[in-house]
Image 1 (tube, rainbow, N blue to C red):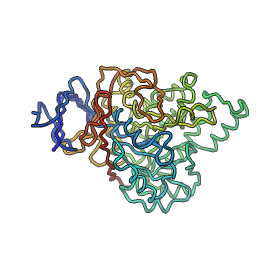
Image 2 (image 1 turned 90 degrees about the vertical axis):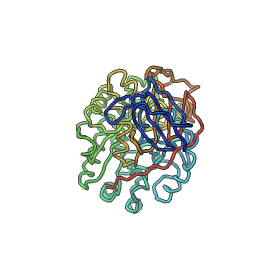
Image 3 (image 1 turned 135 degrees about the horizontal axis):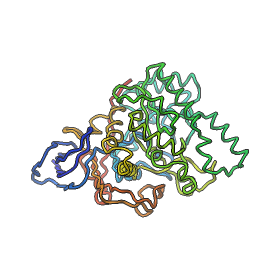
Image 4 (image 1 turned 180 degrees about the vertical axis):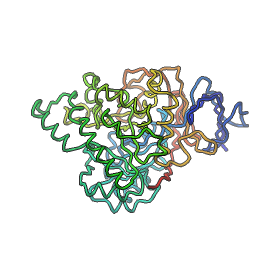
Length: 446
């Protein structure tokens, strides 16, 4: 039996911060307590001065495999995620082939087996015509059903009102939505072309993919979900206008939940001049007032999950003009560090960070025995050194695309150690090479 003792840690878990030792035996947390004696043959990590958290569970990533692997793949991006303290991820279906049948979904799980540093789950994608696949889906086969109710990267727009109604009526698991009103966006694009031609300034992106377009779509999704009493999770919210639609109640009392992504908590439209297409994403990064409203909604409980929407593109692809440069940016390696900076600046508490980045995805998606530091549960853990800064540069970026929107920024904290299923996969600034990820078990049914 492999044994690992983490001693003298400051555990942040279930709304508390306390000093503990944690003993890991094989892939499980065997004991949490004070001054645990190291068993014979155990590896020991002295965590003095460091925070111990459950590994972050990222409910929204685009690792680009199969079919788009010039941008990233399951191996490279899961390794970068582990270096950032993300121990589990849920990958989106807009790949090639699209993950819109149970057969393709099963093939994607086979593709991931033995290649992911962290634990993995996959969405089944909704289309205007695959309602039979959605009906047939069994609980546990997918983390959820992804419905692009607004056009984004990939050809998966669901815009038939009858199809949308059937998806919410028959979905056996949670429906996660990208909410932007495409006709409104297309009209805004036409107006921008009339004014600027093809070379539209990036500063127009939040006006093209406007707050009104977001609100029109998210309010529609909420109406249809309520009509059928479906489980709805609205992804990557960006606007002050949308916040009042979501309840501040605890997630255990809600059937409609909300997510915010780290880049929308970090950037605002003032950064387009400096970063340009590097921060072009859908939905768009918007006003400073919107960013502040998202932080406030987190603190109020209206937003339930913090995720990344990690979506890499090559540097060359990102060099295009407004309409040609694809939307999306790589984030998993530095997401948790960006949240620790929000803690350091007093915008959120450390307990809230852990609740929304680690606990909440496990609860909302029914991830089995992960997301918390509990005896008997899987040992997915991260140690964070909040006293040692980390500066992002091209040499330490691990994404296949080789760049980060955070290049040149010095975070206030460093990821010290990441543990997946009891294995140390990242330590002292280096990946260990252990491929320890397993398929996630999902148990939440409609």
